[in-house]
Image 1 (cartoon, rainbow, N blue to C red):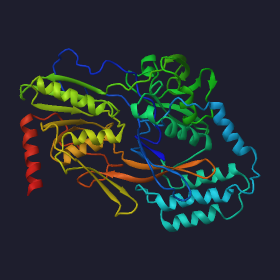
Image 2 (image 1 turned 45 degrees about the horizontal axis):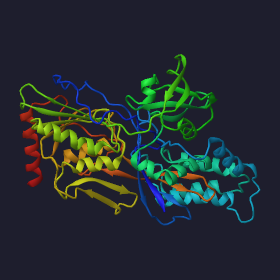
Image 3 (image 1 turned 90 degrees about the horizontal axis):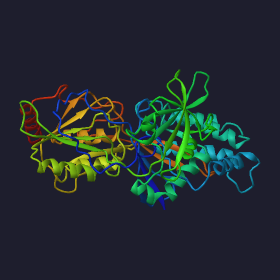
Image 4 (image 1 turned 90 degrees about the vertical axis):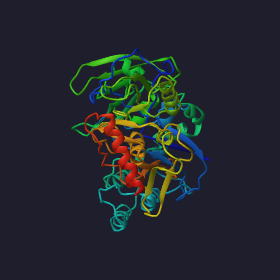
Length: 490
């Protein structure tokens, strides 16, 4: 029995603290400027338990990740409070490397490298870089297994270089310690993950090499109004220490686990603001409950209907669908007859939450998205399975930071003639990955698929063009949607 982890990126992190349920501020006039209102980066993941068979003598932890936004979307590793301490995890890795003379029954170094090679050979999907081919990969096998591998650490280095040759930043190696952290997250924290009752400070870390090749931990995303954001941590900050412990040389997994602890407790971090900014010691209080990502209000729009429901969805977390339904119904009761769904700066989150939100607006049988693997015949269609809960005309606001689950929702509504898109081209992030455990306790993360829109457009690397750059008149919206329906019928 293993758990499926559905995430936004190669790695993920904790959600923000819990505020009052849904927020409806005092009435303000709606300018709906495309530069107005921003949402915060986020990263949260969704677990689904399922049973799968072993593949290539490895346990597969199937992970669906919508990936890619490194500069503003975090490399997202799910970090939870672990029962295993940081020191214990290091001991595990040290024991693996301490004695390269393996027992007679243990897996050999060559077998570990071959196992990683087989996984890529069977499952890897080239995402457009055109660097993978059966001939290329067979030659790579001859290169890496052409001579004896004397040490386990050497075998792991060979796997790292072998995966790096693919040119895919999301296909990567996990050390035994990093994989053990992820295993604890998946195997022991399922009930917490299902509720998103996670303890953390709301930042997303990524290992970034400096000019000399030394890895630094950078803050590539924060949850808006999360603990770290409220305490003064900024995107782009470098994390230097946690509770006085230097994190130089530590992985994002390790640092993330060090940041975890019981809710309402404090952790001290030292950060350097930007590349040249000052160093600051900051004490942050951990929080544990998912925060409502929905902000809404009733507005009046010049030359439009008398009342418009404005809903800003900042991320797709465990509360997104429920709170969006509440907001829409309240706005409906207040007299809204048109709706604006703001997905600007929404970097994604739970892909499944995005799928369920799209279904709220789609007719039964309409396509939400497709998933495509290396086998062109292995296309999976995800469809709405019931009648729509809402049938109002929609304007969906998007920009260059609309990514992942947000793009799935936007294209599902657009391609099924439920909404027009207004703003900028979206980011273009939609890959699926799996995490495979190797027989020595290490692992590999491999890109195995991608998301495709209902109109069969590849999201990843392309983004979605809006129908309007500027906010349109409502009669233009209705005309556009009417023409869309006619083209589908004809």
